[in-house]
Length: 292
Length: 340
Image (cartoon, rainbow over all chains, first blue to last red):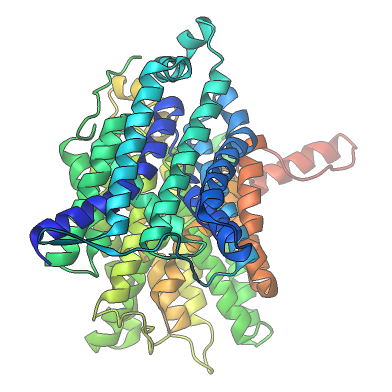
């Protein structure tokens, strides 16, 4: 395995982080909440594919859209049940964070009770090595990269060209002013949760395809790393989240190859601490001035 | 609050008497065997959890910053102190207190390293960084030689034994009381008020000349220190530790104690830490439902009573007594004895 292969594998892994990071970043941009439950939405996506494909034997082209819809609905439900009341009442941020944590724990532990805590094996697409000149790459790596690029372009179009996308931008800029302009900010928040969760489901499908197993706590570390990616790229920025995801994936892949496989997570984490020390707004984040 | 100087003096006397009384009653029960070895261990665990809960209350309740890796600091303290007493070769009665201090200091060092980048910024970075720290320190200690990896670190000597079952409890109880007294006095000092003002409005307190970064860091590192000490007692209370004992669920358990008791209320944390510890020991058979129940409680409490059950109220026996006296002198039946 040479350097180029490691980098491309890292990009493949980074694509998954990027897709999940987009959800964190979008939600944070709109309501300034670190949605701890986002990582567990990935887990829900993985289990819904498992339920449909493995347990009921339906084909992938049904399972994947179904899991997207399940996750989007789940995201909206979480927003309405757990966060909405606090957001409307302008509650302290620590209350929101603790609620998000409660949702995350609830999802994880109830899935553990439903499906058991042991990992379940599952493969979605047949993965065959592909030869590109001297490079030998997994099909899943190329799939990850291309899906993530398509998703990002789609999301950019959605945010910049459509009406609801512009409403999202307005709400994140200034929710009060957006409301005065006649934007239903409650629906915008709901829509953001739905899109973010659907992206997490895409991430889940790619993740299960690359590492063919699921378990109830799979969202923990994946969610954490995706959050690191979002901060790295500049939280609130869509291209930033993608860039952060790719950078983190490559860093992780190179660490595994050249430094240590055991300490990968610790190194990824030190990247976050270094980034916060040097440039807390992230690679592409805007420096927001504070107003009193 | 407060009252005259005389009533404050009376309050001190009443509180001290009650604590001393409680201590000696429990001690006599333990030494005469009324409370067995297992229950003594549980009582020690109650003290440890009280220490953890009041220290987390300082950061999350009083300062208003969410910390999700308290178990990580506990892990650092537990391993540091256990390895110290195992390898130093001094008699345990000398090395144990030193090891607690050492565990606390090492935990505080980690607190500085992750506190500086997180607390310089406004916002919720501390929550996610401590969450990451808790996970990473666990993974790292699984893979290190010195912590004996995923195999548990065993053979940690305890001061308690069959003939003399009480020393661990005495240590835990006295340290808990000591820390609670410090936190109460801290809360009423100039520094405590500065910390509260940061919780209420960071920008305003900064413009009043309060060094917010210094205070945030100080409180966070102090809490990490206390968690490290608690970890040291924990390790010596059980004799065996492995990284799984200090996972994310433990951090959440401590958080639940703080949230349920009331964010900012020390007595609330003490009461909920005590009752939840005993409850979860007695309900071991339902442990798989426990975390689901905890999470639902967290969400419901946050939605309907965001400051926790007690809020910022402190339960105080002298106040209750005064209340009853006032009521009975008015020839009325004393009502429920819980009052600000």
